[in-house]
Length: 111
Image (cartoon, rainbow, N blue to C red; front, side):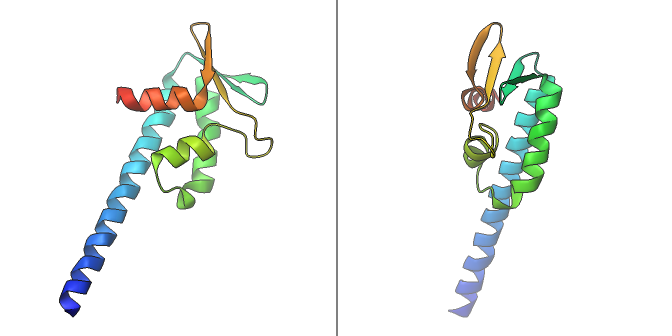
């Protein structure tokens, strides 16, 4: 019985590590998409290039990654709004404005 319990614990740990690795890969992919984008990223009323926005999200990710349990949590809690003001981030691409949450979700679907 103890061997079964140990096996289940190891399997659970490996699954958890796999989920963490997958989230890390997704987040890095999204930050890279932002960095390479020609879109304008609007944060707290100020416009930023993709490179500037990616650097900002990288800093937020580095701070919060130990608490992020999924890519969706990253999008919803880290990448879509200001922690200080609660103001949603926006993206302007080809003259069309959308929330960063929608833009990031679409980028993930294109992967």
